[in-house]
Image (tube, rainbow, N blue to C red; front, top):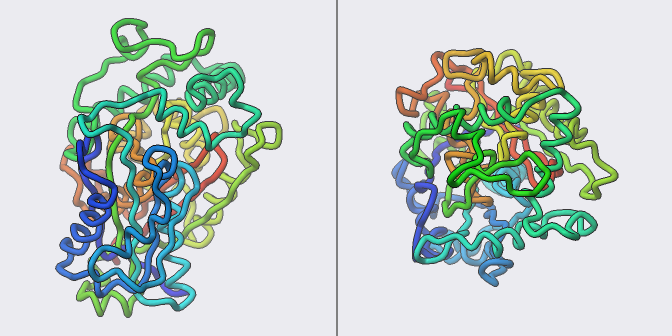
Length: 400
């Protein structure tokens, strides 16, 4: 296979983009990532665009057509991809597949989500309904907010199975809020203590009666966009980018577990583990060689589960990897130094791209000094869609 490199990455600030339309977000994503390396969209051969709520929140399909409407992108092999919250990662894989298939030497992956209104307000009920469409229909009955309810059940199962406490999981959010304070692109810019994260008071409440999920255990409703330009070695030459200055996507894996609740094992999802193992095998390295990672913590329980799927902890031991500071910047593997979905924000279609982008910045030494993992040579990402259903994993290698 052809080696694939990240020629450029760019993202918006995550949070509120006010009256910015989806069309404008796409145009900005393309132009701004091209500006990173001083090229124009005409030099991009193919691409993919990811958005999960374009139909349900905006009554807009054919997102690839909006991408083609950006000057220089017309008449090219483009497609829209959707794999729930793993849509962004899927768009990156789509670009890789196109390059491997010989459809060009350069590709763009764009991801976006406009989840708030033009004044920046979030209609939680409407967003909850839209995201609920990515669940098994048989799991929706009686659930007002489908995904928080499903993950509250997963959280309870995880706690009961492995003897983990609410405070153990809340500590993950506390660490991520601390990181987000230093990330200029992050949504949440407020300090969070463990006492605040575990005390039912003010904004922190149980989202479902009788289940342990609290407000601070949840990711954010977020506007945002992100874009990556991928290239083969020949593509880098055309773009005028030195491969010795680039991060290589050395391995990738993708798998989908059944959506039906009774057919999947949420605490040890086979597809997620398979995708991660495939990425490691392709890159020719092991989990022990990963120094930085971005994992899909839509809820704190996924911060623990994701650490296990990453291979940094055995099943049931993910929280302990965080508790003993192994997940810290100076630890064994700096995990979610961006602030994660919980504090950085979760613009669904952009999330998987942003995870890969931030991980590449870690390897290039481009993140703020307070968040920089020292001497990182390899990084990994784990992006999920649905209730631990669709999985996209990558392994990145720093400049050689």
